[in-house]
Length: 579
Image 1 (cartoon, rainbow, N blue to C red):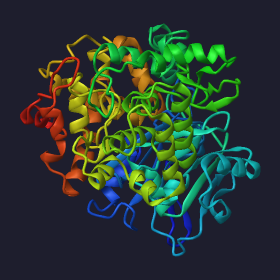
Image 2: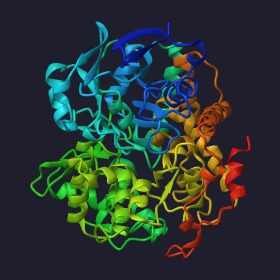
Image 3: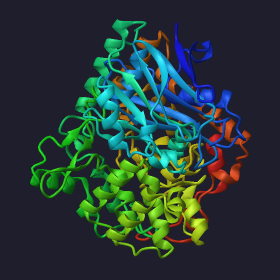
């Protein structure tokens, strides 16, 4: 029997329930978005009693499938006011997948807002325990305390920013070495968790195993997928991601004129090479960081794109220094000092905030004159204000749109209230369309058209033209919705796009777990159904076509070096939803 947990923070009751039949063949994003549409009032306050927070491991999460340790968290976003799914790779996901619970739904608000609670899921069942001594503790210290008592568990938790209900607060998870460094970062779901008084969740390791409906089919698909991942130039051992991490994209996007710099005022950055993945790898080696490149966020990852960045003495400074964080706190702020960038990532990790939104916020703050572009020490000071919960910190902690309004800034690179990631829409039109039209707010992971536009993966298309990009974005968004539901890392799609056999393998593993008969073609259709649910929620929440539009400045300001604008028409944007 497929089962779930329902956690009522108003009554402090935890109940095991049978998973509704209509959710039986769902997982990850498909499951979180399904629950949110069905059970959350679209017009509710995101931090009020009627919002819910849903955790769901993917369809194959907890199995031996490669790079499948992903979990989705979902709810109504305090940042966008719409539906949100935020995805992370962590051992916690695999534990929950093996626990037998396909979803954990957290609802209600506690009567005593000063108390903090821990949800424990172990072989004895599930229960809430008071942990008010952890109130407003930073993430690293919280994991240390929890691990001392629950040494055979993995954790999901919030930092103080989540408890302060800041709109850019994320949900933190531990990595395999118990660093508090993995995040469902986007959309402010940490604030939702914090509003419910839930400081953390602890799930026991190796509680059980995922039952396979067809073990032979699963293993056959697993072999195909592993082979595809191990031979693709991007994902193979010693390949791009394994050798240089995701920040290998810094130089690539800079050369394409699509690396947002100084708050999206340019597409190239003079200091790009100093912050690139190649330089990170060289710096790690120079500082004696043995084994610090090619790190994994969860056991069983064959890509291993993460890293651990050391300081000048070879001591660990932060994990991980990846592309989006490197860019947002680097090029976007005109900062080319890796140590300063690493310090800012560490602050974000410890306070519990999304590094992408944090960098976009600081870009807007610099635009407002709170610091000069390139001033890393001042940027660090501003981030520390968030950790102090000062009046300035509260403004910054509520995101780029809020900060822009507070300071009268007109160049605010957000869609639906969420800061744009590290690809300039005026130079990479397809990803721009994804930013504008995804129900999630500006999100590159919602439909990564950068693959064919910049990396020539899955085909090769001109990034500068808007022609055909609505169809491209739609296809990528639909496929991504299914991948996010499967539990596979999005980076597996590099191999899936170029290798039909690997794609078959991915689908076969899903069928092997669930006993379904998805075909490769049906994957896109299943993804479209998820997108429809997400859009339905947003429409009921009051969203209109006007919310699928770029910031005004992107249609008027020409972006160097190409000196182009975002010239995708409203009609082209709207056509993404013609299905």
